[in-house]
Amino acid sequence: MPEKRVLVESLVVFAVALCVHRAVWDRFSWCALALAVQAFYVQFKWDHLLRLGNAVFRFRAGANSGLLPACMVAPLLGIVMKERCGAAGMVYFERLGLVVSSSGMAIALFLSVIALGVTKPTPTNTCVLSGVAGGLFVYTAKHSLTVSEVIEVLEVLLIFVYLSMVLLYLLPRCFTPGEALLVLTGISFVLNQLIKRSLNAGESKGDPVDFFLMVVVVGVVLLGLFFAALFFFMDSGTWVSSMFFHMMTAVLGLGVIMPWLYRLIRRNPLFWFYQFLSQTQRRVYLLSYWVLLAASACAVVLYQNAKRASGSKKHQASTVTRKYFHLIVVATYVPGLIYDRQLLYVASAVCLGVFILLEYVRFFTIKPFGHWLRHLLSLFLDERDSGPLVLTHIYLLLGMSLPVWLFPRPCAPKGALPGAGALAHYAGVLAVGVGDSVASVCGSTMGEIRWPGTKKTFEGTMTAIFAQVIAVAVILIFDPAVDLNASYAWILASITLVSLLEAYTSQVDNLLLPLYLQILLMA
Image (cartoon, rainbow, N blue to C red; front, side, top):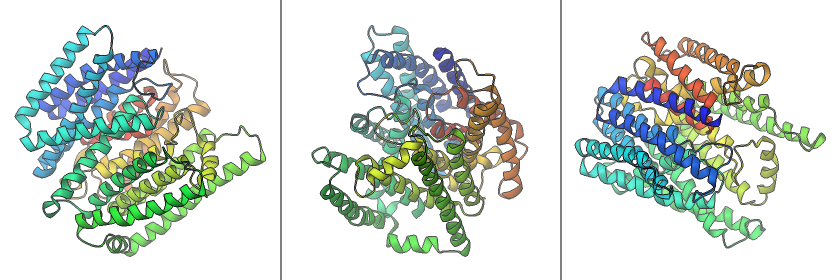
């Protein structure tokens, strides 16, 4: 039965790749199809390695490798970005889309080589397919990329290899191979872009908002690596270590990250940040509204822990309680998407930095809040939090934010892409905030017919599709920038495919579903 689940998941991913190929029909789309075929075979080799326990690192149990859906995200996202920005005449971002797609393909092929190298006996058919896919990728890169872009792809691959060796060793059982591929590919590309733009600060293109996100992501990752190395030799739970943690966080933030950001945006980051937040009265209202929602989320956490204290020690948050947080993030993101996307962009980047810093405090048991955070968050752990990190809330934030961060604003001069692409920045709201929440709640409360090989129900999937269609209608009413231009059939097909993926994938759906929905809406 697990093999049937993986097969259906793979069929959905192939369907998405074919949809993109039909819309684009160029060298890169053909290369993506070849990559999907070889990734399908390589995925089974990785699954075999995981079952035998022969993988080099320890991955999250209870799930397949997830390599096929993860391998296809960056190539397909780069292809649709290239097409959209090329149609808008934005050459810089069209070339960036080529680099994104090529980097994703190079990393996927690298992982296939690793799997084939440690599989005994060597699988002849899979080796042939990988050779064909690799040859097609080299041919495509030779005729599409400049020398500097090829070097950039190799830089991303090199960063990915080093980060993989470090993070997967430090964080066992936190990821499946597919989840690690997605997270580390994103970090590698952002780090490479930040280094490239820092070295060419005088020629850098882009909005200060974009630099802000890159510095936040790279800054918190480097901070985590620094403290992981430091606390390998020290006991992080003492008051001396905790004071050192707080002091070094301030020093690295004010002494490294702030000057780095100053070099990129050419103004004082704190003054820019204050002026940005207080630029209009609407922003002040939105920020006040978001503070109230954040306070309500904290109140839910404290209330649930109070119930646990007064009741059974085995008390765990129910599915409905978990999805209350999805409702809060929907209420947070929708007004931001309608009224001020730039503010939402910056606020979500700040929240990501805060969430990761708090996870460092919990993980290293930094006084005075480390033990308290461990106690509070233990109530909301699920089977996917089997490693030393608690990532569920971070994945939820990423799932809602990635479509906003990845939305090619320069390629949409009127604020939105034409047709179904107008909903691209709503992909997180639709797939995670609405679809996943409704599927989980309705499936667990009224579902009876289960999809073969899974715990998900037919009723949950159908209500999720219906709820997302209703959500699209509501967005059409309240967001005047969205003009679907009679793309309703494509939107319904996209929602249906992603809902089927939600029913069959064993990966973190908060991370995977919004990316696939965004790819389909932009295709």
